[in-house]
Structures are given as structure tokens and as C-alpha cells.
Image (cartoon, rainbow, N blue to C red; front, side, top):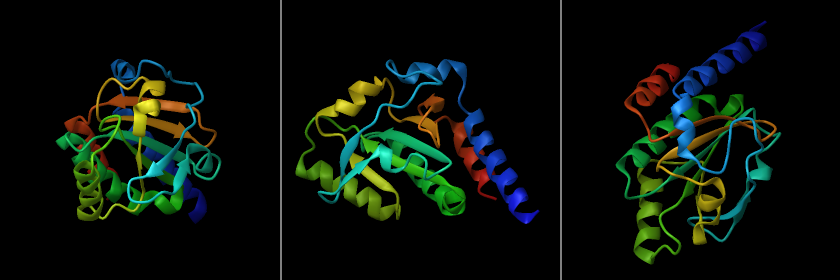
Length: 177
């Protein structure tokens, strides 16, 4: 019974998170749609040469958030911090977060340092990936930064939202209680 209640709580929390996505937010991406398989990618981490693939998360987690962010967007940094808190609470229930930096085609050493500083200052323990060449950015057709795609365990796009609306911060705070 306890396991069932835990599952129901997790489902309700993720559902509440997804409510912040509205039909108009589908405009956050030009090339992906709800119900489709998410385009796969294989990107380097910002602080190593290690490659991380989206495939490595599919079927291992119940919900995967793919966040497209940049250092020049204060809302991106705020969202990363809030998602860190959410993952701390829900990671053991199957929530995974992948943050793809879409700074520009080639990040300078100063920009990479800024990305690493953000990771350190926010104590982020999920993958921060660098989209060198912006191929994933283009494949998804990202229109706004930050933007987020919510995937199920099969890699199917369930929710899409652009920006980081104020209501999302409140929703995440409520879900973390």
C-alpha cells in the first residue's frame, strides 16, 4: 500500500508540473510535437569529454525533462536551481533531468567557465550538456530559451513549455513540499 501511495504521489506531482504547459507553449519548438518520439542526441558534458545520450535515460526513468538553457538567460539559471531541488526530492522515484546548453555554436573558454560556475554554485548533480554546433537546438527547433520537453519512459513527448513562467516556480515549490 505504501508503494502504491508513493507511486500515486509521484504521478500527481509530475502531473502538476506538467499543468504549467499550455497549448500555446507548443510554439516553444518548431520541429517536435506532442505524442512524437523525441529526437535522440549524444552530447558532451560541459566539464568533461564524456558523451551522454538521451537513449541512456529512456526506459530507465519514468519521466525525463530535457531543458534547453543558456547562461545569458536569468530565467534559465533560476529554472536549473529549482529543478535541482525537484530532482533531489523526486529523483529516487524516476525523475531525471538533462540540461542542454544552447549558448551558441562554439562556446568560448569564458562561456564554458561560466557554465561550470553555474553548475557549482547551484550544486547541480544532473547532466549539463553542451550542444556544440547547435545541432540538437536545430533538430528540436527551439524557439525560446529556456524551453522544456517532458518525456515519458518510452521517450515520447508528453508536454512542452517555453520560458519559465512565474507560475512554474510556485508549482515546483509546492511540489517539493
